[in-house]
Length: 96
Image (cartoon, rainbow, N blue to C red):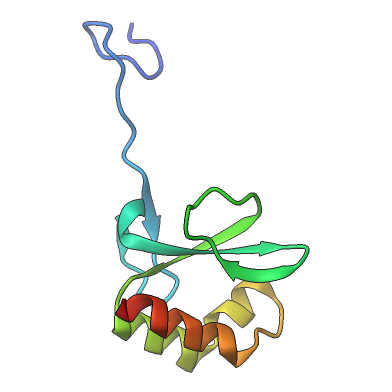
């Protein structure tokens, strides 16, 4: 019988960190996505992907940034009124 997280030879299995984009709904590797986090202070972009709180991932593409703003997806996901400046900041971050 195999142990959880081990192969037959006993070496550890490395988990692949996959997340779904909130805009285009495609599954991608965590490193290819931009993370937003909801904290007590509000919603912000989590560059190091280490801030504790409810997180949402979005592709680092201009198309997904446009969809996010058009659909107001962060408003719906976090159940908050997100200021337009955050959506503009997303576009700037993606274009870098």
